[in-house]
Image (cartoon, rainbow, N blue to C red; front, side):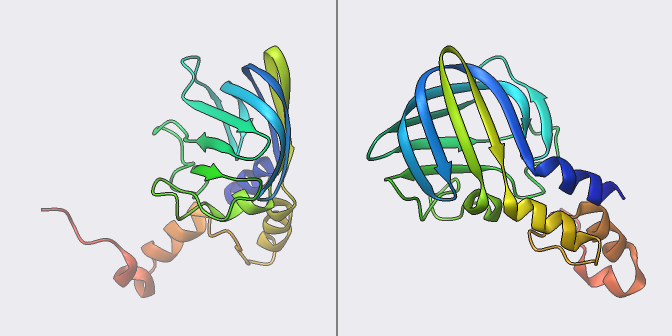
Length: 166
């Protein structure tokens, strides 16, 4: 049930920040012009408040930059939700090394808009599918941490545990 709750919260995004302009993103395709520094809200299944502008987005019609890193105290990094991209109108790469975006990035639909106070509203149909399939024990985004813990704690899962650090 914990994993299903996390999957349900992954479906919608609503954040606040400061910026100017407007942009819509449908999966890896970006349209518009915006500068947005995100302060907090609910995004990628995490509720957070980081008033010192850790995440920013710049998109100017033909290209831009976007990043989203959750505070280390959250499980977002473990659940594969963080990303960083350099993009043209279409993004095919990302991640810290600009080659490994999180899979949910490619199914996200976002609208970012504002002048001064700014907002992000989003919906992720891929996360909705992950939530629905999760009820049938199918985890397409490999983000069910409780399920992974149970597998690792089972006698058959002992070989999956990371070796102890020296």
